[in-house]
Length: 483
Image 1 (spheres, rainbow, N blue to C red):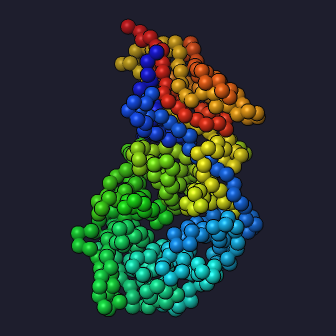
Image 2: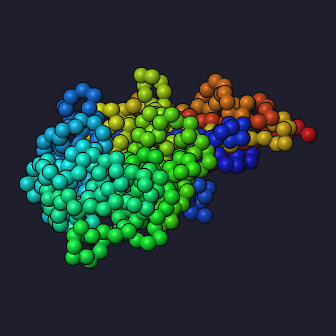
């Protein structure tokens, strides 16, 4: 048998499946040590554990979540309700805001204030008293979708303009109509703000620029654009903007097009999306509602980009530079949809996420193998197998996995893997052929299929949906080509 080259890899399905039709769904590539059995493996994405469900009304869902670095308290918004999850793990209702849908963003100053904006209003949570109060200053700008904190000031954008405003120092309740500036490098509207290395990034529809805080005694001149930092790269989706480890991520647009995912390092933009990912993005009818969040697990930094209108989630791994899909298998429709996870915060040693459809708070866990009890479908399809258009006869196909991971009882006590075969370049697949992955402790189980026919161009696809640990190490084929 020989190694099936490229079986361990990322998602890559572009304009033509006849060229490449690789799927990597609910699996992510992990680079191993050079002395390992294989230098790369596929691991299962985390499952969801329900922590609590709030009684806020039908149809209301998560809108934003934030951990205070100062107090370690967790704040989150579901519908129009604002909740506190304290360090003792108790949850309480802080109050209600004036909107019930749309993303809520947070920032915090050193004066016990967490500021929230919801695209319409601004709110302050006092972290000492855990009270929620709306900002009532008449000078507070309208349509604020983003808030950041830098050197004592809260800063917000004014909707549908290029303007951004800043608060009085250490006071999110106090605003001055003259304390604002305009992202004048390009005449587009300002979509979002992000602070990176104590510098302010202004990201518009078609451009971005970087500002710094000055020592001007005149507070109305407190911020100034850094020369040479104007870039002709903006964003197609204001809530795709995320920042971590000196990098900014966002779904891009510029005067020449859209659909590239950018990562900034220093003042430079690096394209991290592949041609195949960009093809997928451009095939969606609406990408303006894309939402991003970032989470970390075991050295990986994942940028999660969900397209609600297209019902798809793509994930970029900063560690490997590879992409995979993250999906929720809807048991009612029988379809793979975008992940249920929307918005994330790390607190109390856990990765908390909100539900995109329900008033639920979950944790992500690599040792949980369902989405709150619903099956997770893990799918990998291979690169094309061909030999100069000659017919290839397949004696056997084997997937090397961590076997013997079956559960003691119930679903998963005898976990199985399904194999599907395509002989038309990945456009259609045959019936599912099942093989055991080994009951609990059966570590010598080999996942194999024999006498698999012939083809000039073949794609193998495997599917695992049992609630067990999944580690795919490699795949092998035993073949004979016609002469």
